[in-house]
Length: 85
Image (cartoon, rainbow, N blue to C red):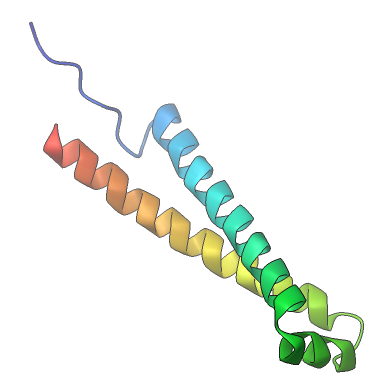
């Protein structure tokens, strides 16, 4: 009997796993940006003097960066797991 192989990237399960990594990265980026704004007075001061959209651009940049990083890490993890099995 053949062992069950875990699905790769190009499958519904693989896409769901990648989306999960992306959402975890976005949540981590949002948490990090909130903590940075709340606990670092220099960042809060810069955002106060930056205008209305400065905070939004700051948060979106961090969320996007963390989400892309987590997605790429998820791709590496899924490929490594497929090679292992």
